[in-house]
Length: 494
Ligand code: SIN
Image (cartoon, rainbow, N blue to C red; front, top):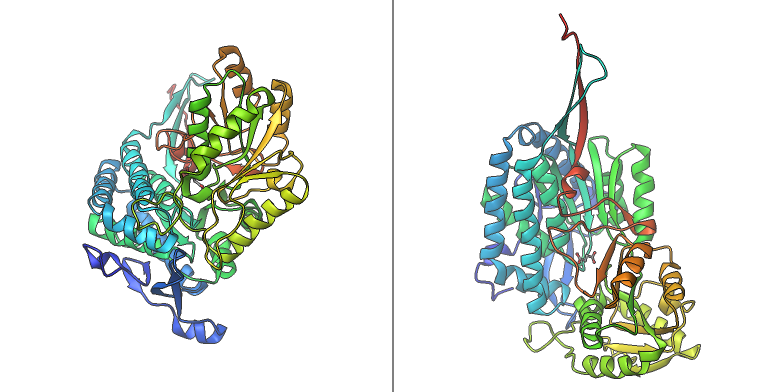
């Protein structure tokens, strides 16, 4: 942190009502909670910083400040909101190096990927700054001569969010940008592992001139308590979450009490299918990009690689050779492209899935042994996996590729869909008829066809089945933060 070009981006307390607020000490004493939380670098276990530990009382304060700010922000002309957001976007890019360094220090991903994430996060702010100016209503032919039907769109109100540690900047940007563009105000609780990126974003929002109370960040380790406030407070109109399906469904149940709108981006179990007519080199490159991004810790990372039995051996040879080139280490080192996992629990969970598959007859082609006591797990490829093994039917969230053979299109579509998840899927083929059949047959919200990286601000990101609801980014993203209001103009025949 001492190497930042702008040390003022290193913030250590919650940002509420345009002020940097230390936690409510009395509340901590009453609840026996600690005042400060350590932020740990997963690459070496060292403390990066200490942040003030906010409670649900602070979350409530933030909601109240967002409620107060809503009355003026929702009426601020879209062009003005857009101008302030564009300034925020520009400041994010101008401070990209510092934001990326903060991100790598607290999350572990390689610096080049961290820079990519800052640009990715900023792109949502730019995208929605533009979309803010294009919120159109409608007029609808009326059934009666004396009436007119008009439809307007209005911001939904105070939006609360809980965001994950795997994209400490972009997941906040993707939600906050849509909310602010729509005219909503926003309170986020970032993952406690990675609060510094969120706080740096708040500093830049303030510098951009975004008014007090419009964007609030509550940093605290009491996930259940703060989560309850963000989902159940009567002043909250909408709640949005990115994280596991298990936690997401609990939060949805809490939102149900107050019939709140939700958008949820939950777990995935992405199939990556390589047909025997595929461009094999392109498929290998696509699988590397889609599997090993962020050390396998994304919801859209490939979770199962299905390869036609005719080309399985060939694919495995080429894939393993590419995997052997990946360099694991501290993300601040430029040569590195695989960082550590986020926690000991994550390493143990990934390793137990690999061991379980090996015990059931799967073959480890490379990797598979954790490194001493560190949080590094080597890029691993496991062959002869079957779709019923835990390695194939649970979300791995680590750098492990299970490979499963198949013989027919119907068989592989059925195996790919045989999961409660439905976020992203990928397949490689050069047969146009097959491309349409498979793209339509996969029960997923997003499908990469001959492409392993599909996320960008212009595209609708989101899943089906237990992978969640709602869409983020794209021209559809703003609707998740708006209400449709129907105006009936009567008495027009007089
Ligand atoms: C996620 O893992 O939740 C998001 C990944 C992405 O935006 O590509």
